[in-house]
Length: 85
Image 1 (cartoon, rainbow, N blue to C red):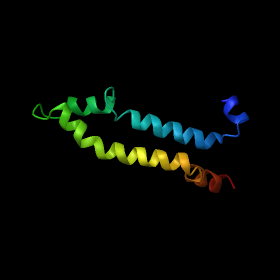
Image 2: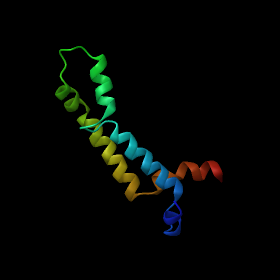
Image 3: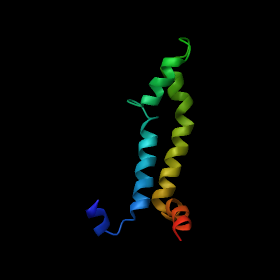
């Protein structure tokens, strides 16, 4: 973390970006534990491929938000700035 601070990276922005990456990783194959949780509770007629197909739009949304926060860092820091000021 010290190396990021020395480069001028905002720790709040980095924490939000890191959390978004983790959230996205729970939905992306091949590991995607959330997908296997869903498979475990759904009827046997639903295949894993159907779950992957169904979650794809949400992955696109999450990647879009991740990109927006990466490019526009103020999206991640405006609320903490309001709370702390």
